[in-house]
Amino acid sequence: MFELNKATMIYDADKEEKVYAMKEIDLELPDTGLVGIIGPSGSGKSTMMYAMSTLKKLTAGDILYNGESLSTISDKRRQELRRNEFGFVFQRHYLIPYMTAIENAIVASNDPASEARKKAVKILTDIGLKEKELNKTPSKLSGGQRQRVAIARAMMNDPKVLFADEPTASLDHENAYLVMGRLKEYSRNRLVVVITHDRSIIRDADMFVEIWDGSVSNVGGAVL
Image 1 (spheres, rainbow, N blue to C red):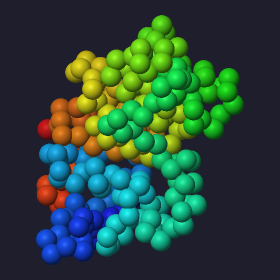
Image 2 (image 1 turned 135 degrees about the vertical axis):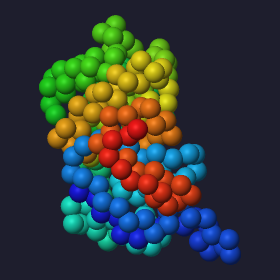
Image 3 (image 1 turned 120 degrees about the vertical axis):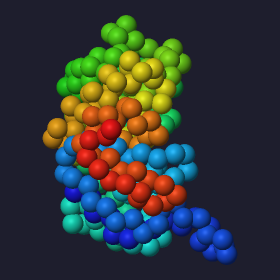
Image 4 (image 1 turned 180 degrees about the vertical axis):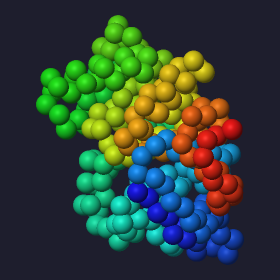
């Protein structure tokens, strides 16, 4: 599904001392499955996710999505991919403060309102939100609960690719494994890319990619 060819991202490119967030990365990702991108803070793993999801443009090289170059597509095509094929979970939840958990989950849904609401309730309860919490606004929810609402929102349109940047950072281990179990289930027919520094939460990953100083240091199957 994704093919990275000499993918390079340079910050401060106009300065004498360049900072490589990604350095000539060659990598292929499968069409389906749970893929963990592992690395310490500042290693370039989030930059790689942003480049694959069209949120950032490469300095050099290319990324192909189903054979289509993401470096040359139009802004309109980027918007279509983000709305119809990609889903996003960021480290910050970016919920709308005056909306309830359910309303936040369905805010960008393509489904009719009644259908979207039923779908949101199922997803939210599947990943650990209680019924009494569904109609609370973000200020009445814990950090972990808000993050679960953000995950539900990302799943609402059944994206072919779900990008998750540290999706369990605000969860305790029990709820982190609950969420990762749901993401693993979701990845049976879709691609889920999880960015993390915590190897334990992607122990069931189908593939892992280790990033170090902007380069791929290791690629493997099951995470040990």
